[in-house]
Image (tube, rainbow, N blue to C red; front, side, top):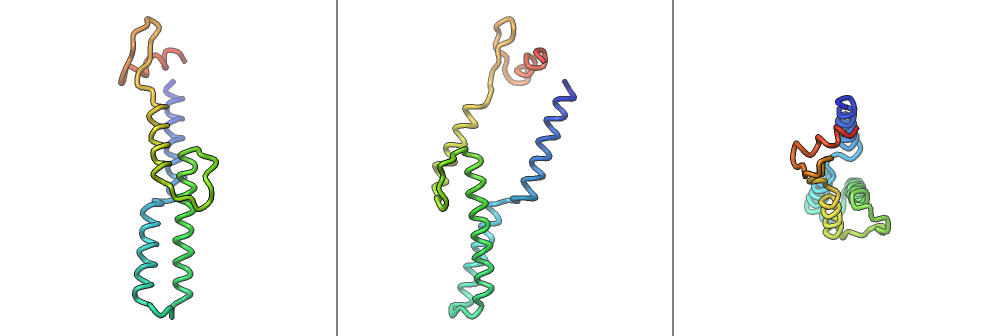
Length: 127
């Protein structure tokens, strides 16, 4: 059983590493890109540095799309249309699903409810 648990733990670490390399911190990167765009627009009101502004806008768009993909994956809402920024709704959906899917107690073979660290014991014994 320890072998299975180590595999699960290793899988979680690999997914976190994949997430960092492919997405990074989406919210932070989005904020930074928006801030750079704002600074650039304020320092260049006449639009002389258009190419630079275009590149920064493209970066903001990239992070907005990644943010949308992240929320779509987390909320499992397949009907999300492109450009919908109703992230409060999706955050509630994600939080509700996480709470609903969490196993707080398990009943052992004797019928007693097991919580906390004892909760894992019936699973280990079963497998």
